[in-house]
Image (cartoon, rainbow, N blue to C red; front, side, top):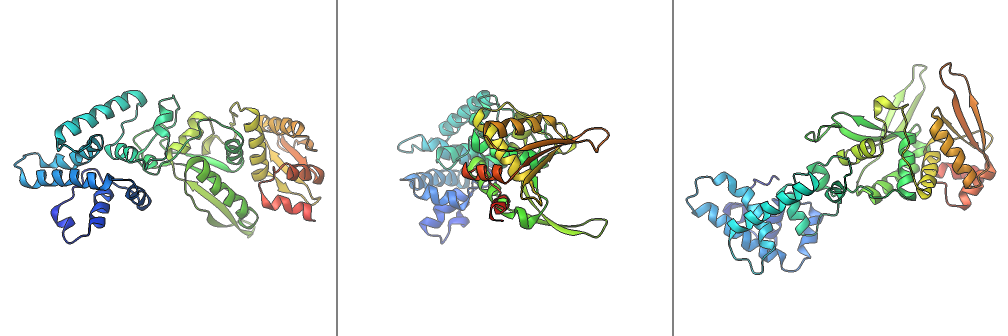
Length: 362
């Protein structure tokens, strides 16, 4: 619900104390998990109940002309009341204090935070870091949806972060609608799309775990059926990451290409751990199993091919490399990792695609 939603007396008639407490919090758009989290905090419910009661009384029994503002004041006053022990009933001073804090936060980060978000921070139920990173000059965009879902962005890119980025360079693209418009809540996303549902389902399950660990994003795998012109039918997996902050972090901070720029790769500068992660992620998503029990990675991008070769050599993974000049404009680079190299990757725990491990069983 929005900040302007006010708790009225009829809302709390014939309710238990727990129901009233939940109602006070739920009016601010909290999730059930957050409500339960707040319920475990000492004394917060009693204090919020006192604050809200005073505002509800003020709304219903005073002669204020501009009653429409009371809903927003309810939020502001609740936050302000959390700073005071005990609650002194001065809603005007509380409202003013919080507005001043939000103004200072805006000057620091450039983000116009809602009072609801600020309340969630004060109640210790916000687990994201978007505003914190914006204060450090990150270029992604922030929306109220991402704030509400406590989306996180990695401050540093190491092995795990590099691995997910490698998978993204192999299998994903950014939806480019309104990438520069901070007022648009929809039309942005990072789309992972595979080629074979049965073979890649386990890999895409791993991607969901990575998104949860690194971005606090809860996604799902979708199935897409298709039929080619020659009547071949198949099913592919996909994950739609519906987050403006994540999508614009990839596009603006990592210079990740959009759907219209798929061949214009420009790899970020990584440290060694991130390079290893990128290699593992890209090979895990891009490599196809060959009939000679090997893995083959096809790419037309020289920069990616060069990074894969460098990392294979640094990790002492046996490989073969060739260029196919079937295209009159650009060649296809092919990196082949044989069974010995696959065994080396298995020993070093660098195989993230379960279907690739099956080669060692043949």
